[in-house]
Image (cartoon, rainbow, N blue to C red):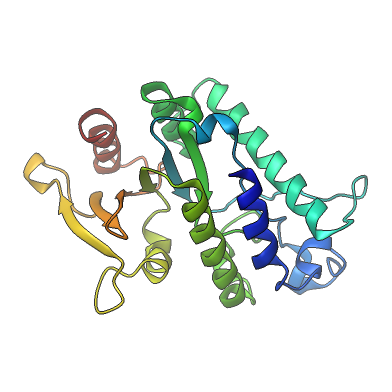
Length: 241
């Protein structure tokens, strides 16, 4: 899987301007606040897991794939560095104590404690951050969105999760729906269901199948502290999964 991921990444990223990666235009306002690329890797243990769960969040970190001490060399080297960095970060976070309050990684830790830790995969709706936050206000967001969509779809194809939890939140829901339409002739989703009968609002928890194969759930971002969001996460973890 790691090899297939690398090949898919190389094909997609070879079409992206190199200065998005090598920071050669970081002195320009347009690119000064662009993060490094979020590019998750995987492991042999994940490949062998009996159940694979992918959680799709949204990019808010400033990934420093290259630096003055470790400058950009080649795209292949950049891809390998990014994959290794983010895989290490995932494993470290899964092994760490819970954060105070609600957080994205608390959801991943809860899943890891109830299922196979090696079977947890982390993906993001957006592959770059802007100013350490969502890139939706960046001037080149339309191009970033296209790249992010292709990367996420490649990750799903290669990693073959049994379950996907879309936890990117309401503000970016329109982009998830663009990637994976659920209405009209181009819909790739089916078998919709909700848990209103169990007291969970449809805007807090909703399920469907992607490509008639992968069981998916949509929740609010795990950092949401509303009572309704907490109840939906708890219901998903304790009763659905």
